[in-house]
Image 1 (cartoon, chains in turn brown, blue):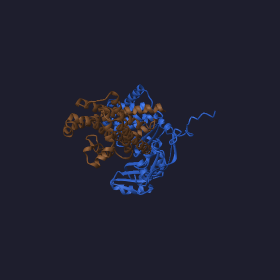
Image 2 (cartoon, rainbow over the protein chains, first blue to last red; image 1 turned 180 degrees about the horizontal axis):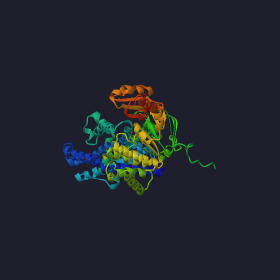
Image 3 (cartoon, helix red, strand yellow; image 1 turned 60 degrees about the vertical axis):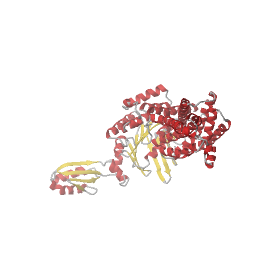
Image 4 (cartoon, rainbow over the protein chains, first blue to last red; image 1 turned 90 degrees about the vertical axis):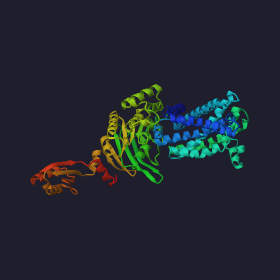
Length: 253
Length: 321
């Protein structure tokens, strides 16, 4: 049974990844857009925000990675909702396969895509002048933390996908929620420059905390605090949204 | 030791599909209101009804996609609610709602299903190639399914439902939206499958399609079965056949109309130069011919025909198709 579940999940993850071959726009979505953000923030805003683009890059790269990661969690929900509305899910569910493998396959594929996007941004950042001040262990830890966080948050996207009727609505909901969360944070600028009320929000915002954790792990600096808090946030997302999503999944399909 | 668990096969395997009293509600809407169905192995049952009659809901219950609120259904002897996995091992589903992945190409769609069904990579590839060949899709094997024409998509959809060689095939409105040529292709495929022993549950809103493919028809409307029988039985149920007469000479129209009225069991209709009327007596035609002859009336056209399923359907549903 378990072997079957793993095989089914692998097949369905393959199915999601092989789509990229046919729909290069998807690749555009999760790699070109963050690259443009990276260039925009570094060269257009960087000099104005920090003393130089290079200095700003050191601060902003982890933030850009985190922002991109949060938006990319929407892919999971959009993909699931598309499968449901197009009838692909019905076909899958009429097959003798492990019940949750369509969900698991999608999530596994999306975590792989997330890893690709993080690596791409990191490499490009290095090309532009970002320096990793720590060692390979810290870099691996950064990946693990970011991917774990993405995995946890993607359950929110799964829940939305189960509750709305069309894929576009997942996108709209996600955008409305994620836009303020990612920008009213310490991802791109130091919250110290914000008005008090916004600063209080930015300080507890998981985007800020995860960006701080990535900064600490890649550039050196405080690690224990932000990493612990990030893990707590991730656990919170998982504990709240995974059971709700699974329940909604059972009901919807 | 206690007895080994019985190989959980249902009690009744006389029928490939056997449903009793299926009820399914969605909010205030009752999609199925006590539907009974019985399909013998190797036959085609046509589930006929207008849009919203509950056809798709019935298929979804029998395909284990939704649970009925009441009632009981067995597929291949397995209970659809308690043994969904076993049911899924027997069935293939094609239709308006079960669909192929538009972003994958033809080969990948079939490969995915083969792998999900436990075939090795090599076997899944071979099966995919074989099915693409059989459904005339080899040339489109490497094209994304989203770029297929309606007919090609439906063929790929059918191929996808056949990867596991199902004993039972559910076809949910398999030709809705297809042009006549593609429709004929799908019909040919279904006929071949039935000839090979596959049991088919076909839903359709096209009476012609049910007439062409199904050995037995269940007519449903508002979630209830309103008639069951072979196409011939259903046609006979409404009783009347129709006699059509075209007089050879226009000035004899009135006298021909009177002759027809003498055998008719309902109102005689005159449209242009053609007289039509319902008859039910098997000897009506012979009687009419003698009558016309005795009165020295000649006719250009004389025909007796069974009602079309459309007429049957309109009669059964009270004129609301």
